[in-house]
Length: 134
Image 1 (cartoon, one colour):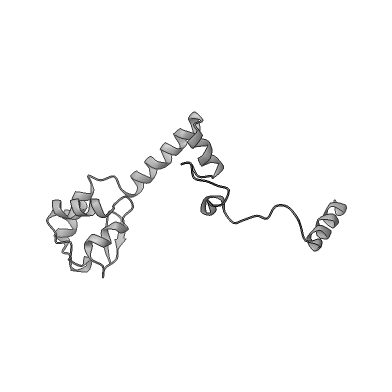
Image 2 (cartoon, helix red, strand yellow; image 1 turned 120 degrees about the vertical axis):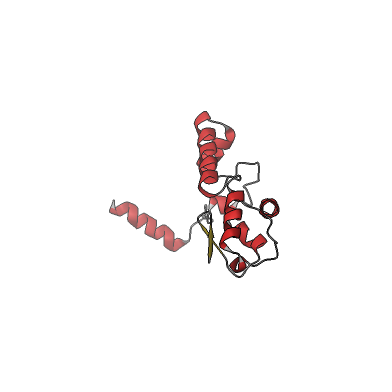
């Protein structure tokens, strides 16, 4: 397995796809990096020489990736929370920050459904017993 910028790159994939496993590197950036380093995009990552890996790593230094990018994102979100903006409040509440509806969707942000309202008879009895025990 090839290691570039601290990330293990899948060895059997084409290099243009394998580089997208690095956080902050997409298909558009990959095309620029490979053009800058002069490497064929159809080449498999296990076929790369040490010299070619060094060229790719040097080209990737110009792009903000991995830890630096994650740090910037967290700083931006903390700044939004600190100044008390609407987006910051939504981030702190764990809700969508970009105007999506939450009545029927947003399950990934809000988590698993919690039923509110009518309870089954068995669960009501359990709750009553718990209150009496206190």
